[in-house]
Amino acid sequence: MEDEQRKTCYIAIVDDNEEEAGLIKHLTDIYFENNKAYKYEADIYTESDKLVSMLREGGYYDIFFLDVEMPRKTGLQVAKEIRRCYQEPFIVFVTNYVQYAIPAFEVNAFRYIPKSMLSEKLAEAYNHLLPKLELFDQRVYLIERTSGIEKILYKNIFYISKYSKYLTIHHRHGETKVRKSLSEMLKELNSSEFIYIDKSCVVNLIHIASCKKDEIIMTNGDSLRISRPRYKQVRERIIEYWRNEK
Image (spheres, rainbow, N blue to C red):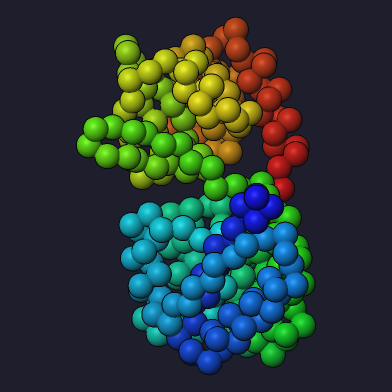
């Protein structure tokens, strides 16, 4: 039971040099052997195109270790692809090319580690990363139909809108319709991150980019109206969330 409660950390190591990628994997194995609070899965990609294709198909990792200098796609290019698909994961650049340290932060990189200092710095990076991962759990919303089951990560849901007897879940990979009420949906989600901004719309606080007097701009670019009676409550909730996020 204790093992089931541990969070699983999903890690991608991207380096065209198998030996150097193997060293990161080896140091990762040692770190998690000594840190029993987390489970982990670490995959190595020696071809960055394979990782990018997997991401475009909906694949996900919590942490990416990227070499900067790689053929076909550089680490910086891969990082931009990651950010097009997901804003949440942590990106760590591992390279000996110091001149890339500043551009690395243009893609919101968490850290930059010289390869010559991997043994000293990798554990330190994990010590800072793992507590932050608690903010981005892997909860999923399951939609069961006779034709099959669809799984949507909470973190991928932008907002949920109601029209007639149907709800539309607007998420990172498109839209999904379900027949139920908003109150039923909120009860099933059971998360304080989802709030009403109108009687027919619920938004995910994670994906609010800005809040104006009568509208919210989501991270996917959609503009949503806030009903006048809810404005003060919505504004206060957003401010509270932003103050407490990482």
